[in-house]
Image 1 (cartoon, rainbow, N blue to C red):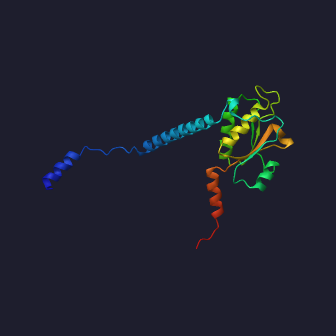
Image 2 (image 1 turned 45 degrees about the vertical axis):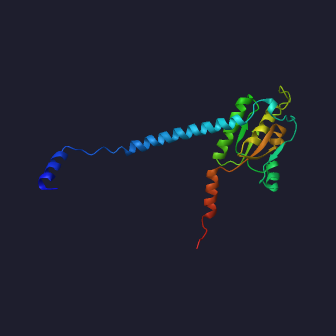
Image 3 (image 1 turned 135 degrees about the horizontal axis):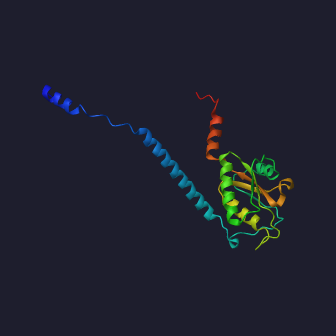
Amino acid sequence: MGEEGMSLFLEEMANVRPLKNNTASTIGEQKVSTQAQNLRRAQLQMSEQLAKLATDVNRIESVEPEAVIEFKRDGVQDAVFHRFSRGGYPIKHEILLHQLKVQQAREVLYNEIQKSRQKGERSILVVHGKGVNSKPIPGLMKSFVASWLEQIDEVLAYHSAQTHHGGAGALYVMLAKSEQKRIETKETNHKGVNIR
């Protein structure tokens, strides 16, 4: 480009201003968008999970009000389950369901299990009551809770509580570690290890 071309170019470019940097607002908008998507995804996942948990009494197995009940997934060690069934692990959270309608109880149970896992809790108490006089079957809420817990993947085991925790009207529930807690445990276990 000659001198004449360069001066013409500079003359044309004299009033041109650079575009404003919109990066900050774009990132902020993306963050809000991502949070909204995550919330929608979580709500969809919750409604899918809840849909699997029956609220029709004809689709569950009835449990006697005074029965001691238990459930254990493969992989839960017998010694751990034995200690758990005796109330041998600290309980930091109780979920009270015995005064709720079936639909409400299902949602509360599922949500509280998710919250407990996020907090890193591994053993919780679910109070369902015995339901001796419940209709249409005795032990109605207890029967539903037992059925639901077996279908919630995050539940590793349950066992009727000791008398001082509610006996046959409550369950100890063992939860799987949340993904975040697994990562933290892994990181903690690898600290101080010399790799050569």
